[in-house]
Image 1: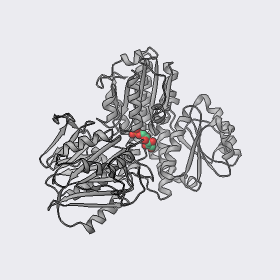
Image 2: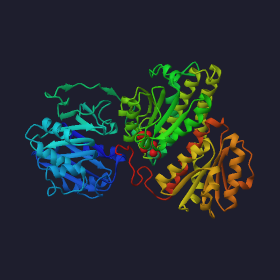
Image 3: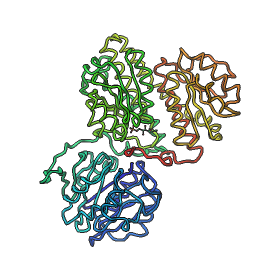
Image 4: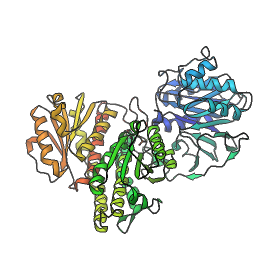
Length: 608
Ligand code: F6R
């Protein structure tokens, strides 16, 4: 979850690392640090609790002299509190190291190497640094290979050795790393956004390999006896730095909300052929849709909520079981899946550790795996049998917005193609379905245009410590996402309930003026949901009602009503998602919170 970067080359390492850390900050932001190899070959370490800006200020005041190589880190604390000592880089003898991941056997290693008196931090990472120092006899590759054989857990390491000035070493297991050799020198980072200002060519560091960066070259080594060289596939990024900038928006989240209609088009239109969904370019064969007897969707957080919507849309059309499981649960269960199961893995980052573990488990069971992923070349994308990329571009705000919409779009395309292949949709029905999906795009634009109305209604929500989201059927699946969005960036305790469940306990929580965001866009349960809304209203709730334009409701039913365009039931999620995202955004803004980097969270969850 931490952001890491390494650089060596002709330019000023300090500014490259600090600028890189600013772009990586969304991966973790409780403290940050850099280590520079100075012109006299000494190592200078600076680290500070707080945002990267605090580190920049500190470096301006403390560091004089130039440097052309170094490593940098933004931290999301796992072991040990948020202190300067626990921030990375860690110095251990002749080794300086940064780490993204978790070393599970750090305690055993501490004992084995008698490090108790050496450690100045509470981190697992410092233990790895000391172990490496003990193993180091002048050959970095050998020592790193030995370290990799000893540590258990996940890691992306960047390492400097005192007696190897100008060289930066790296190694990974599970935690992501990408690298590049550019006109500006050699670079490595946990995330492409740090490399994009310098190049659009990069490679994914393969797991269980060592990378050596020098100002002139990047080499990748196998772990075999002779450290054979490995030549990774060079990839090209299909977005530029503008996509990772705010471009005039006050926050990434607002920018990303606005980008949704375009992202939807990018995801859907290239996969349309004569009005029908077509995955020929994605190399996804129809056979996998024809052969399966059930679908199992696995993901975390917002991506899992996209899966829940997809389940409710797909199952009635396909008439086969569609199950959705949280990845962190799935990976420790004995799932009822087999080679006739299509396991759909959803992940924006393609690096979420639990989702990755779920994918690997599904493969062990012999299931066919299809990943819906945003980040090209990510681990989940590479390890799945098939991948359907969403084309949202980089999502920087920690709260997922555009990634959710395009995940839904991709899942709707899959459902539609599958229905066609299995004879559940005629060509005309499939074309109609797709047309409705495309019609949802202007409906999203309509709701984005209403952002000022949504901003105004949030005044009431932010005065309450609690908020409830209710709905039935698909509306319940949307509610789950609405509640997650609100709680993660506004810190308002928000819960989603199936409206019919309220009477089984939750209604006890409804008191005077408690905000209830009620979603009622599903025709077949509309009257039932309206009855549930009356029940909460009768108990004093402040009701914000989300319905379709044409829905007929009693004027007194809600305190505020937001109308979305009249779409078919299965497609209302798209404009509704925009409304829910804007509610969360303005609530966070209204409370003067850090919208893009909410407390305790990080964008990419690469530790369990
Ligand atoms: C919430 C959010 C998270 C992610 C979850 C999965 O706004 O962004 O719940 O959806 O951590 O992440 P990915 O999709 O990268 O696997």
